[in-house]
Image 1 (cartoon, rainbow, N blue to C red):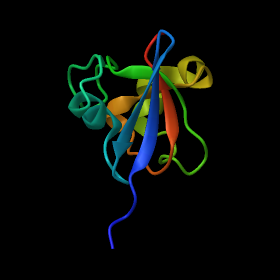
Image 2: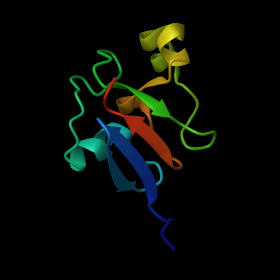
Image 3: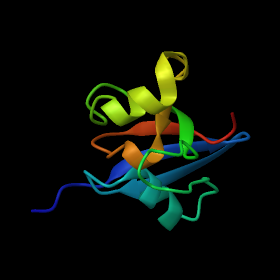
Length: 99
């Protein structure tokens, strides 16, 4: 039996959109597929172009990767930034497109 889709809530300048993703889907690719205005360049975490503020409850994604920690730094991480290309969705989460 297939696992249920997960709701990713995307907030952009007061507008709310819900995107359904499969467990384990890459957040950046899911957002691109949903035609959301997310910037990206490399898709490997090196350029940090896809950094976004997110609210990621425990269990909704893997812990912050070494790549994210190195590329974003402690200050950005403390403000809720994550790299969309490095995040694989495991549960509901919220993404803020307006910074």
